[in-house]
Image 1 (cartoon, one colour):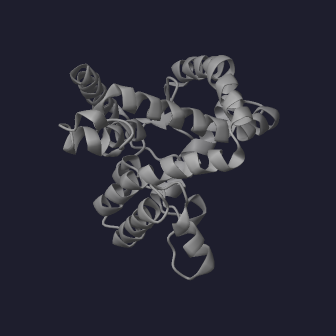
Image 2 (cartoon, rainbow, N blue to C red):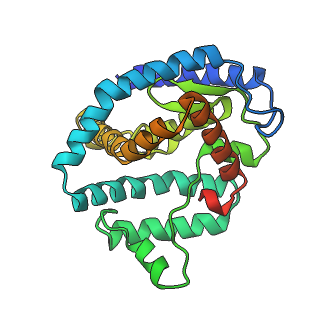
Image 3 (cartoon, rainbow, N blue to C red):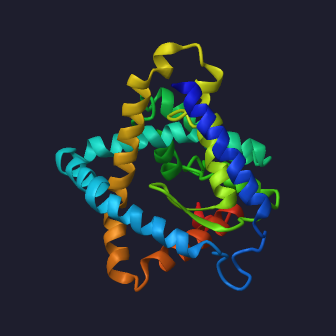
Length: 254
């Protein structure tokens, strides 16, 4: 099963590399968003909205209804702590050692004193002192942007939502090599530890993370529905602007 998944991921990587090579490196600030695939993107966007409305959102609302707020908070903290593995790796790749050290300290403190990340002690330390251990946001798409790789064409991914040629490739790399919840560190560097790589463990954890993430987005999505005349266009522009800010390490985006 794992070999099949890896084969599919490899095929996706080859396809994205092709798309990235063919895509213009025109930035989002020149003549507006680069969206040559808009008809296809809108079709995928509408499909995603249908799935969200009929599957993900009802499940997410049920999750919020039955889950006490403190439990929901610690679940979010746990997955945020796991994500620091991705943040640290990409901070090192960007030679941003300040971010790498801060995120490493954050991971160490929250994993040990915070009971495997259930309690975000590092953020409490930041709030009570001048030590900045706040959550960073780094991924391989930002790493590529750091080294001058253009975003390429805007792409809406099935179920995953807004992306770009560069960020799609970055997502695949993060998922395959870095993210502990998906293929990640455990699948590459601890592949012989069967109980960690077992689908019986990995799939439920990934499912809970997806539901929890969607639950956090419900209120924002409702506001977006009410405010945007064209939800596709608004989502695209907001995504591209945020990604530009993240690549440039703007404090507002962090």
